[in-house]
Image (cartoon, rainbow, N blue to C red):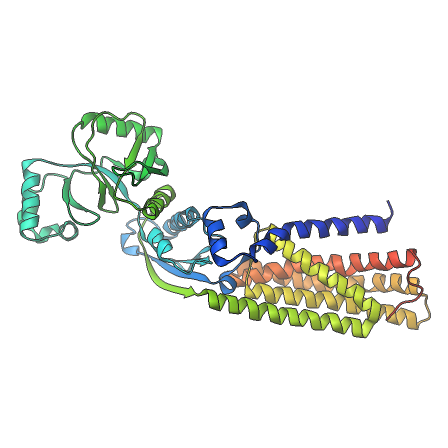
Amino acid sequence: MSKINFKFWITAIAFALSIYVLLPSFTWFRMSNQQQQEAQSQREPIASKVLKLGLDLKGGSHILLEADTTKLGDRKLADVMDSELEVVRNRIDQLGTTEPLIAKQGDKWIVVQLPGISDSRIAKEVLGKTALLEFKIVDTSAQSQEVLNLLRQENITAAEYRQNPSAYPNIERIMPQGANVYANSDNTEIYVLDAAQLTGAYLTGARVELGGQYGQPTVGIEFSREGAQIFSNITGANINRQLAIVLDDIVQSAPVIRSKIPDGRAVIEGNFTADDAKLLKAVLEAGALPIPLNIIEERTIGPTLGNDAIRNGFMSALAGVVIVLAFMIFCYRWSGVIADIALVLNLLFLMAFMAYSQSTLTLPGVAGIALTLAMSIDANVLILERIREELAAGKTARIAVDAGYQKVFWTIFDSNITTLIAAVFLFQFGTGPIKGFAVTLSVGLIISMFTSIVVTKMIYDFLFKESLMAKLSL
């Protein structure tokens, strides 16, 4: 196989693969916002194959979380924040959000960006829960009944008592040893509960089911082997007593234990809607936060602003590309057309790489693409000007092209390498949009080396070989 054929097939394969990779994106961006949201919620395959747009292009939600360091105890903040970050990431992943940005910011803050999610209510509910799941036996002794009577008489809520028991000495005096009071989600019932018998630390899975009293959604849970043994012992020793399932100090349900449950499975009922059950499943599967997180900042970028950013950014980039294409044809005629082919392929290959690698395209990323295309054209200008000099020295077209590429190669290589080094440092030490700029710039530079030198030289070699170019059009 000749060098021309080898380069041709490499270019043809890269072109075909790029079109194949970008086809889902072409289909996706012709869909309405509602169709896109449905595809994401149902986790259709196309949603994971499209070119991802960042928050500044697509719109969405920005949430800043602050760790409550008063609950830190003896633990190190850095270690706790690593665990917090992992739990937050797992919770957001459970929601099926496409390409979220979740990163630490400073010592005790976590920033969450959710492209395409303009209503952050669900995300806030998931992030705000500590997800402390406990199983406690309901105390029905005479002492507990007296406690409940006093709470009702003095109109004291369960949360108020737990917050400061010493403020209510008459209740604290008769509270059963190790017990405390908890209410259900709508505060219609208060329970006196023993100390936790089992916690969510033993959970291995959760799932949404339909099995409530009236067919409402419930959340089924499974324990590890050790947790199943503890659960079996608890249920075996407390038959005909109520087992309260407490999530974040709220009693979700308190079913009566009818028999020993040896398989380590339980069901949480709480008059859940489908969304409530899904959120609870997501929180339980992600695990509990080591310390609470408070939402201290929330910003929403609406679809209109996102669309404006896309339109303005891409229109300016398109205008720049069209002007450059026209300039090359005006200045270098047919040789300019060859350079323009390399430029278009550069853009196509870069977009395909972004879609395939699931990298997020942001406005700074668009700027990186524009800079990449400019450097690609700059390389072609250097080549064409060098060929002009060789032609002016009296060399034939074929020899002038070979000499032009050979003599200018290291100049192009050096300029691209220095820029690539800067891009690598930006990626290593930058965050968010800076990384987006660095990715498109670095990958674009590598692709431009291929298109500007290999592809254009292949076209010239083919034209000379087939005698389609007797002299250069410059």
